[in-house]
Length: 196
View (tube, rainbow, N blue to C red):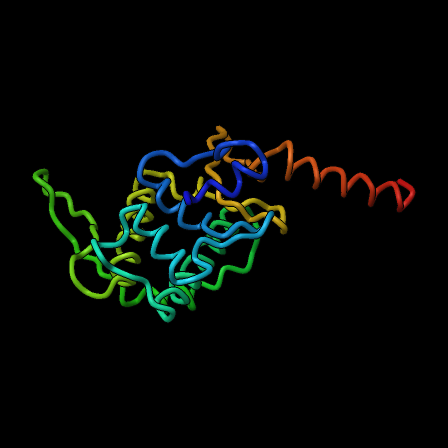
């Protein structure tokens, strides 16, 4: 099952706001949990193994154990809290996330032009490598000015990761017709009930 299958089946759309390039891998990882309709592609060790292997995050024959699955879930939700912060929602628990990723398998390599670059290191446990791979993409996106454009939907019942390609970086919703419209309707009803 692909990360997007749950949404495509329920809502009939592809990812409405995909991140460009390799940042899409981070977006897909965060979107392994569907708050809107339920479903979690990291919900069991078997589902996590299948989904991560499909995205090239596991080596041949590797399997995700239960303890690793929980670390991956915590990492995913830590990333989601950062994406919510990009969308003006406070509460990112960076200390917990920093503690979790302190063992990430990363290394610095210099390119032919002499510039340093971060890349995932080989070896170590599968969680350390997955953290390293995804964090490499986060750091790369930050250096290219794209990281803050990856956001989580402001709809509390959704929290889907989307890429804000607007010029002024003001996007709030993964899909205006669904999440944005619901928010506007709720605000309208509240104003109406208050007699405004």
